[in-house]
Length: 348
Image (cartoon, rainbow, N blue to C red; front, side):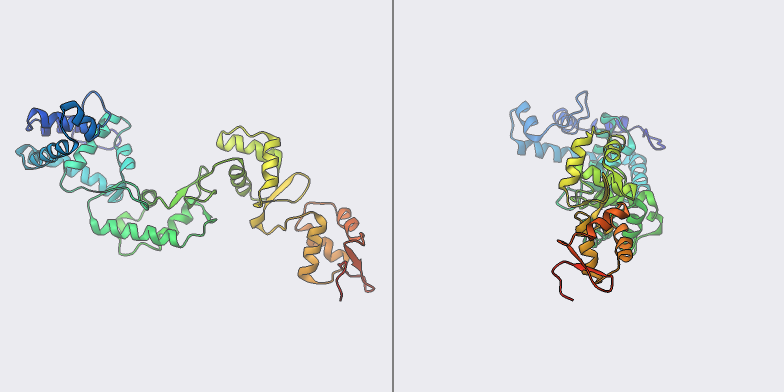
């Protein structure tokens, strides 16, 4: 196999296995699994139309062919090939997403088709079909497969919709839900492959993990890209730089004006200075400076000018004088005899 040490050639192995079949059964298998010059796998219906028979009859021929291959002397002679595939499956985690396994074997689609056929016909291998929770996957140990899937369910159940975790954190969180699984599998590469089995969790373009359907993972537009940029930056950033980083990180053309408009519309972002945006999840209060002053006073009660300036400066990147000017507007704030300030209209 191309990406892993191999002592056998999948195409030659398949050719020998098919040699025991009658012509039509062999041709049906070749068309069905894309084992000929045309690597596109044909449907039962398409093959039925070729031969003028029903799709159910094609299915019967396919099943007959697979059964006869497994019973043939040639199948026993290819034991080493199936053992090698089984060893590879174990080395990749014992349960692996189909596309991941085939991609690991080779980038060549024709070769992938031949290995896929060997998985189908090989008796040690079991396929679990894609469903609402998980992707198509192959395994050789039903008990291990169940434990991994149950751990993935628990992981998803314990994730908040907005939670975004670095890969190492996600791996560690997942490992806490894995019970009675052999230590041979508990390494980062294997656990990452197991995470890919689940449809409920996913990784965003920056490599962080979370709930698959959340906008933090399933990025759809400029707002989602902007959120990831600001979050990665870790502190307030100017909208011009947000647009620049979207282009650099995601290879998406981000116009400055468009980016600014999207930031204004989305409650996930808070304007904290002249063109500077932060994330609301960081604790920044929304609104203009006077709204922040009012919020500070409502939370803390009467405060001196110095105390108000100190607290507001932690919420907004503004000049001290801007805060003082807002405080002096009697429409919004009132100065008490003891020098403290309260919102206008509030009785103390």
